[in-house]
Length: 212
Image (cartoon, rainbow, N blue to C red; front, side):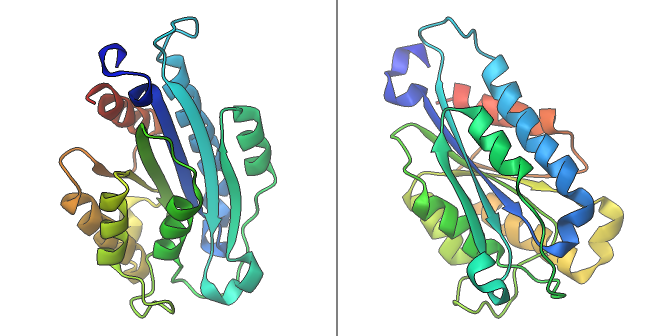
């Protein structure tokens, strides 16, 4: 990183988090995973090293279209992790009964709203159920893939369910949809995790940062 200029040392990461009712059982552990990933990434670099990357983090909670004004909650990118933690602490899951969620809209909302710097850019998606195949806005995997490619954004997916729940149609759909996107991003720019600890996600992100 030190040899590649100031812009490369800028690291912007947006956590895109499912906040529907199906996530209620996972929400506290998901919050903790986000906090741990932020901490891991920053702890890996000496805080007094002038070549240390400049980290900013943001969060986008997504739900589904029938949530109306509650479809998204947004915390813009900031270098103050305490602001992100406060936002997470006040987050809540809402339930409307539908198992399909606006995953694609959540990703697109996050990348369109984030004021990314010209450095390393990533979305970390944490969710359980897939996007409705008949998306209300017409969003699909290809649209998400194109947007990530165009903006040079990496995608790291943390599937919060256990493997035993992949037999559920909606959970299997999430895996299938996000793996399709990850496999078509440039080499190393997409990763899918299930039954992983947050440190595993952090290490892959750090590997990508260091490989620039």
